[in-house]
Amino acid sequence: MAKEELLTMEGFIEEILPDGRFAVLLDNEHKIIAYTAGKMRKFRIRSVVGDRVHVEMTPYDLSKGRIIFRERGLGQAGGPPKRGSGFRR
Image (cartoon, rainbow, N blue to C red):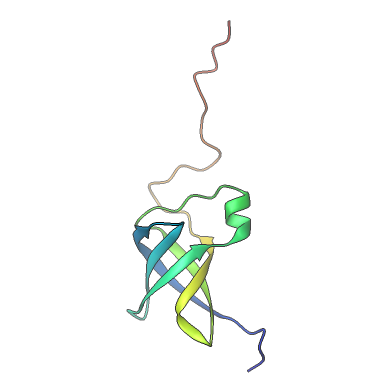
């Protein structure tokens, strides 16, 4: 296995922790600590408890990871959030 190869796992966010970290429960029942990837921070993609996510992990430390993708859930609306009522004076 080369140094650049990363493991990609799926799971869901179980808890929001301080400093932009999340407790993620993987599909194989392991619990890890993960943070949001830079692209997700750049485009202000918010994650909440219960979201399904894809996590990248290094083979050297399997207790930490980076959230690289958040799947769109059933209860979440698509598109950007609405700002204000649109009324201007």
